[in-house]
Image (tube, rainbow, N blue to C red; front, side, top):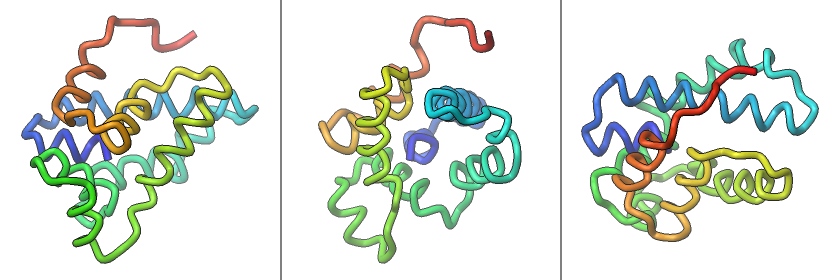
Length: 138
């Protein structure tokens, strides 16, 4: 959803790549918090699915983000989609889980705010990409 919003807002490939890379780091932190192996996410089931979901023209989640980035309302986007975009409900579940576990997931939190709190997609993308730099690997 976040990568689609970047595309819908007209951000370039570098912005999308940065967002996907940061998204993989978020997935890894969540996996570790659930006693998972972060290397699992480096394969097809992790990185492969992430890249396809974020860039594929047929990705329902990317489509939702793209249309939100273009200024459409969520209810209109979902009504015209014709399929379930599982990321919409997953955003709420992930937000709740991360809050319970104390895991920092800035992209997921911003997607939640756009979907459920009415935050502007442009502001959300800017907030993620202008966060203070932190160490990426321990």
